[in-house]
Length: 102
Image 1 (cartoon, one colour):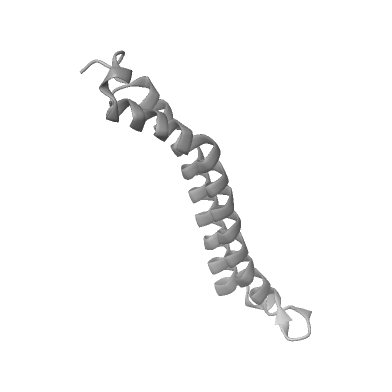
Image 2 (tube, one colour):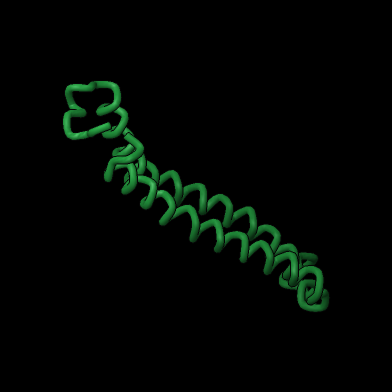
């Protein structure tokens, strides 16, 4: 089954989402760390009361993680799960698996 076009398509679909999002989030996290380390005056800038830019950026990390989780769940529900279910059903019912050669 792992040699079929259907499985390869599923892997491409997953990687097409996971890799760019992972690279983007790691870049965003690295930006946060580098900014907090080397741009101290910038991150100490007050935004509202005792809240400064560093706190906003730190909280944005949590918000970003939540958004990525929501986006992945939505993506998986619409793209990954249907393809996975199709592959699973073909593996569980050999009669539906006539086109797959070993």
